[in-house]
Amino acid sequence: MEEKNKESTLARGKCELGISASGRPNSKSISLILVVAMVVPLLAGCDAFVRKFTRKKKPAEQKQEEMVIAPQEYVRPEISKVDQYRQYYLYWRSWQDELIESFNDRSNRKKQLSCIEEASKNLAGIKTLVGQKKQAKLDGYINDLAALGKDVGADYYGNNISFYRQTAEKIKRNVMKDFSYSQLKNDLKQ
Image (cartoon, rainbow, N blue to C red; front, top):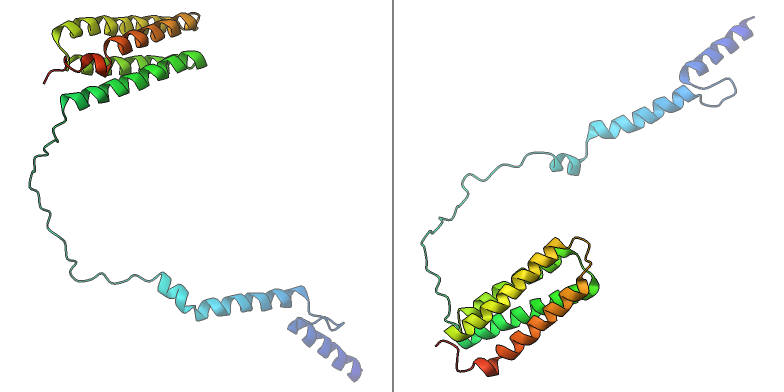
């Protein structure tokens, strides 16, 4: 009987330690060991981890540069009338080409209207640089572009795209013929 008591006491001791009667650790003891293995490093702490999350002291005085607010007038470099004309003419031609290309590609109406507007602005810029006779002629082309813009804006389905393309090409041809630099050398206002 004493031997049975010793064996049962040993078995109870092993169970309390988490070891089963067969000599293998049970799930409670494994989970306890894992928890202890995770908690001990957390309690001990990691120096890099602690340094990362501690507040750093702010310097006592930060040097702040004083802002200098002194208005300066920007003087635009003078551009000659010839250079202004060439710039307006180049921009107009680019926008006119893009307008014609948008009619070929059947692009959206918004892009076509934008091209017409920009081309008109650049023709108006050229108008300020030329004499009275040429201004009257240029007004006709600006009005033709405005009428083209109205027509394109009203044509939601793009039924008359080929007609609009022909009109834009005609305007381009006429402006290039009448307002090329070789034609206007002497007419540019000085």
